[in-house]
Image: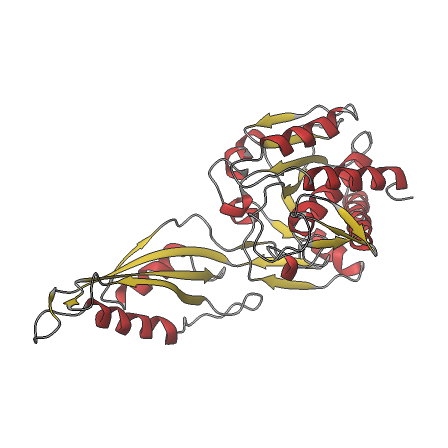
Length: 361
C-alpha cells in the first residue's frame, strides 16, 4: 500500500518549515527543535544530543538487526546569485525552492516519512533508527560522529543525499593537506637565497602528474588537486616560505594515511594532514540492500562527493532524492515529484528487506 498521502504531505510541510529556519553548520539548534517537535507530535519518543536528533522504531528489540536512516539538517551559507529569498519556501511549477531543499532536506524528510510509516509495525524483522544529524557540511566533531555510540550496534545504514535515487555504493574519502616549502630569504636583485616558490612549484608539478597505481572499479583514481597557494611579503624579497593546500580524494584501495605517506616521500615540502578520519566508505555490491535496489531498477555508482557515511564504521548505502549538481547553488530546489519518488523508493527498499528476511529465516 505504500506511504500514505497524508504522511507525504506532512513531510513536505516539514521541509518547508526547515527551509524557513537558517541552519548553518554549528548553528542548527532551531531546526533540531523543529524536527523534534515534528516527531513528538506523532507520539514518537525523541532523543537529542547537541543538534543531533534521533528516534528508534517503537518495537525495537535487541535480538534484531538495526538499520540506520540518516540525513543532515545543516546547510552551507547561501551563495551570491540567489534571485529568491533562500529562507522562503516557494513552490513554482512543481519545484520547491529554498536553501537546503535539495541538500539534503528532501532526503531528510523523505526518510522521516518512511520511518513514520514503519514506526509502529510490530512484525518488522529489523529495528529502524532515524537520525537527523548536524554539522555534515563541515564533517564537524559535534555531528554524526558524536552520537553513533549512543545508537547501539548498527548493521548497515542508508545515508540520504541527492543522488537522483540511484545507489552510491562507494564514496571517495578526503584528506586536506597543508604543504610548506622552505627556502632561504634574500634580495631579489642579487643572486641570493633559495626561492621557496620554485621548490613548491616542483612539488606541485609532481602532484599534478603523479598517478597512484591502484584504480578502483567504482571510484576510479585517487584525485590530487592543489587548491590554494600563498607566498611572499614584498616584490624585492626572495620568499623563504611558500604555503599551499592539497585536496586529496581517496578510494577504498588506499588508507588515507598510506596516501599521505606516499605523497610526502615524493615531495620536498613539509606536509601536514588536517585529519585522516574521512576514509573512503561504501557497501559491498552483493549486500542484500543493493541487490534489492537492482530489482527495483536502480543503478549503482561511485560517488566523488563526501558525506557523513565517511564517519560510519559499518556498511552504508548513499541514496536520496534530488540532484547533486544543485547542491550549494543559487536558487536551489527539489521537485515535488522527486520527493514523492524518494519516499516511495525508501519504502520499497525497506519492504524488500522485509521480504529478504522472510526468505532467509
